[in-house]
Length: 334
Ligand SMILES: [Zn+2]
Image 1 (cartoon, rainbow, N blue to C red):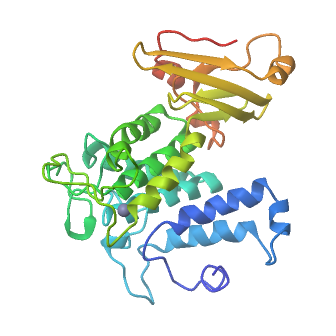
Image 2: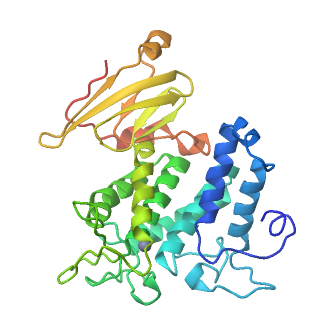
Image 3: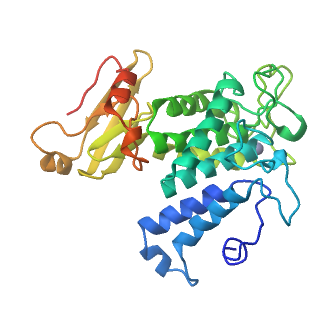
């Protein structure tokens, strides 16, 4: 695909966004585990995954020599021209996740600026109180600013896409607001999308769900696997690490083994008591304690300031992080 498209400058882009994000995850995987490629029977050039994803992002809005996919598939304008999130809501949220991926992988301020603009528009003007997005039934698409009817469409996959976009923006910037939106989606749009016994699903999630029932199957069965994909990724969203720091993104009772770059392996447990609001952490790893410098080296904050792959220091000012810090009633680090 790289040879046919990006390598030959052949103007072809996916009709449904998602492969942009998938390719960059493959790029990250092969970069972090280069020996993995040696086990495959085909040659792997990790940089081609990144270049092809970037090509698909860059070609949006450039329709020379091909059929325009229009606003429905984020093809009416380039990412640098776009000021609002438009079109099919699942495609749009996944596409902008891919744009944020490209910003992260290439350390490119222009892509970050474009992604910020669109995320701000999505969350500030087109997202429902539940974290749902995609107000209009026709074309399953975003509506205009502040069009937030109670019978809106709000596909499960679109909420998940908005969550993935937010998670990636947090990785880029370390800003807490992105994880707050992800948390809102996790607490609202995700649980409503599946029945307690795990066998029935929603496709639409309007605020007024009167006379709507979950279904066991659907002609377009995209939402159940998206839900499974998201819950499979959830453990990796709980913490972020950078330098000597561990950042708590989500309050979820868990035990985690983290690779903190300048510390090493750290095992940490988190207990959450929702009745009292008390969150307790224990650092379990003896190895990390032994290697630690004399004074405390790891901070535990409610929200992340930086993540494992911060774009640049100018996005990670300590003051911003401290001003955002809202500590729970009690911290324990041992
Ligand atoms: Zn779906």
